[in-house]
Each structure stands twice: as structure tokens, then as C-alpha cells.
Length: 187
Image (cartoon, rainbow, N blue to C red; front, side):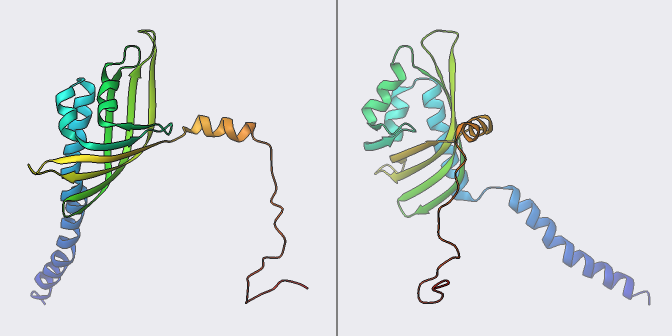
């Protein structure tokens, strides 16, 4: 009998130990997410400091950016936006949600919050959304963005306002449901 207590204790430890290490591992992001988060953080810093040189290193010469409004811009246009009076970016915070590294190409998805100064010094605007960035490793081994797409995410208040303003609509689909080659509906 005394041997059964230590055996059960050992069995419990063997069952619980892998679970505790699993919880510890899940708190750390995968290595590709951590690596690409560092690249996105350097982008955030470059925008916040209006650092033209850092942004030139992060954006490829053939960079194409599609803004949340649908505007298509080049690397030089992105850099020039840092210095537009009355519309300067104040901050950019990007959080990587997922990253897939495929050799020298990486596809990064995440969320962002961008803040910029309005025409008056008192007025600041904030934009929240999701992004997809495609990176390519250059000859020096550094990641450079070749494509960026941003989409604004509506806030809860904006969605409620839109739902209240929209007229109620009802589907005019024929009932019952028709599945071709399986069910032709009542005839």
C-alpha cells in the first residue's frame, strides 16, 4: 500500500506537468510572430519619430500601399506623408496577430491604431483597423514591406448608428430552399 501513494503522485505529476508547460508555451508567441512584431514595431517608431531614413529601410523601392480609403501609394508618397503640414501622423501601433514566413517572403496580418494631427493643433483623429503586410528579405537579410493593405474596422457605436439608420429589409428569396439536383422544391 505505501508504494501506491508515490505511484499515484508520480502519475499525477506526469499528467499535470505537460499541461503546465503547455500553458507556459501558449503565452509566448510563435517565433515568426515575434520576429515580425519587431519589424512592425520599428515601423511604428519610424512613423512616430517622422524618421525618413528608417522608413526608407522598411519599405521596398517597389512598395505599394493601399490605404483604408482605397488610395494607392508608393514608398516615396508614404514617406512624404510624414511631413504634410496639418495631417502629420502622431503615432502608429501595430499588433501582429499572425505571420507566415515562406522562405524570403512573409505575410503578416494584424490590427492597428493610427493617430494623426488634424488641421488645428487641438484636433486629433484616430483610426482603428486591420492590416495585411507582405514582406520580402532584401540582399542584406532585412525585411522590407512590398505591399500593405489596411481596412478600417467600425466601432460598436458606428455600427449601431448605421443599423438604426438603415431601413429594415426582408429577403425576397423563394421558399422553400432549392438545392439543385437534390431537391427541386414544391412543384
